[in-house]
Amino acid sequence: MALPLALLVAALYAGGLYLLLGRSLVRKIFGLALWGHAVNLLALTTTGGRVAAAAIVPVGAETPPATSGDPLPQALVLTAIVIGFALQTVALSLVHRALRRRRSST
Amino acid sequence: MTWLPALLLLVPLVGGGLALCVANHGASRWISRAVAVALMTLGAVALGATTDGAMLETTFGAWSAGLGISLRLDALAAGLVVLSGFMLLTAGFAADARVVGTRPAFHGRALLLTASVCGVFLAADLFNLYVWFELALASTVALLTLDARRGQVRALLPYVFASLLASVVLLTGIVLTYAQVGSLHLQTIAARMELVGEDMQLVLAGMFGLALAIKAAIVPLGLWLPLAYSAATTPVAMLLSALSGKAALSAWFRMWPTLFGPETVAPYVLATIAMVTLVVGVLLAVAQRRTRRILGFHSSSQMGYMLLGLAFLHPVAMAGALVFVFHHAIVKSGLFLCAGFIRGGIGTDRLSASSTPVALPWVLRGTLLLLALSLAGIPPFSGFLAKLTIVRGGLETPMAALAVVAVFVGVLTLLSMLKIWQGTPGVRSRPDEPTLEICGKGRAALLLHLAPAVFAILFGEVIVSWSIDAAEQVLGPRYTSPMIGVNR
Image (cartoon, rainbow over all chains, first blue to last red; front, top):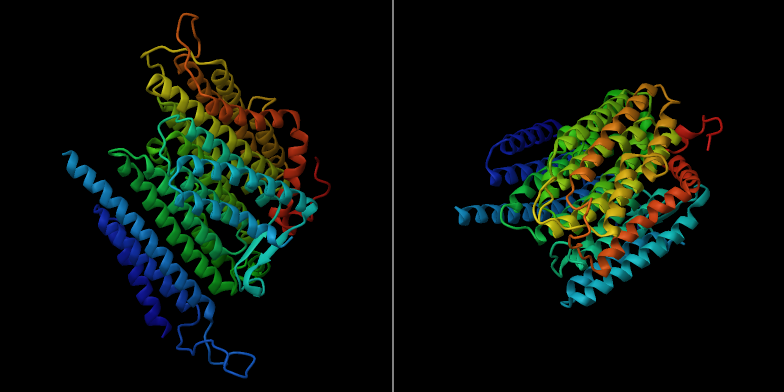
């Protein structure tokens, strides 16, 4: 499972870089979004990329089951998605404003 | 005292929320001033609580440190919180003085920026640091677009894209660090960093270095900075130079010594980059013809000094870098304020412009001269204190040659300051010219900037001794234990 994930992460970074290097501002934002996904996927592969159970402590037990995955990267990804989305929105609105101003001035 | 770090964040956050909700400009102004005074007071309490290497750490939600969100309050963070309260106060005064017209929403956004940079100063784990960085970016953009006129939004795009790019690189570095050491808590990472192979350490150093170099506007990557300054109104430029830039530097100070030791080539690379930034930044500054652009490029160059102090990885040089952070924040924003008044009075900040000659009042002329000399590093002023401490520390390291070069680059800084002084119309006035009027709040903001400069002249000894303590705390035992009696 680790190798396909690693290849996917590499493809996302490469695609994002390609879009970022273009001239179009909207494409740049899509490039940043792709990079955001690449980082999130990378965070998930830090657990080894294996399919693991949710780290929830069963009723009556003290520790989560041994098959459970590391919950911390999942928490990080959740936060990173929210923040990345918010900032892409900010960037998109700025680009919108910049393009609108330019069109009205010409 | 575990409430103290949380309080330092809650006060500006709640204040910012309130100030954005109230529609009344007067109310938001008083909220901002109250928060600024509260931050300085709480920061002073924090300074008292962090003497002699004491450190307060709060982890929320009863998690063990390293799992929960934790805030760490050390001497540097306490000092920086006082600084942000101070900057919030003076930038608020500058905004109210309508140096260049400011909208009511300024105070709420300035408060949120203050809260986010305080978050960066206090963050004890890497992910927390990243989150506060993003919030600081969002509030800086909100401040910059507040008064953005036609065309200025476009000047902001490089800043936003550069910062977002840096954020992704930073996050990648954070994730890779977690994959290597299994923790995000800075102190835990520092303890486990020896287990990471040297090649991986260099990869991480490159990731964090690249991300923070963009955020701190190091020369080849920092061309967005002068563009952003050109779009900013005076109070926003003050906050941008004093808070946003210093947040990036604080992250450098926190991460570099904890993560990377002198055993790799990373410090040498950093020192070289700092040196290039120092030289190229000041050369670009000297070539400019507008006051604000000189100051903007100059900021980039000064980043070089502060990073050089860090690259030496020596307590005294580090202490010099810390003094430099405070000195630069106050002096540079004061100069932006002066430039704002001059631009407001004359209509342009182009040097040697010959339109509408007005005489500058003594308070503006005096502040401009004192702050410019301070920035240039002329002996009794704070700039000299900072540079001297960096060079003194640097001379004791294997990179002593760089310290010597840094001294000579200071001459170029003096040149750029002389250029501002010589070129500003109205500095040499004749009695028949009308004097530029500055309202009470504007004068208050100018005098507030002079106060720390005078304090630095009188109590340089105290400042250096405090900063050596703070620097030892920042560097950690790895760099301070073999020191045989740091010469104070």
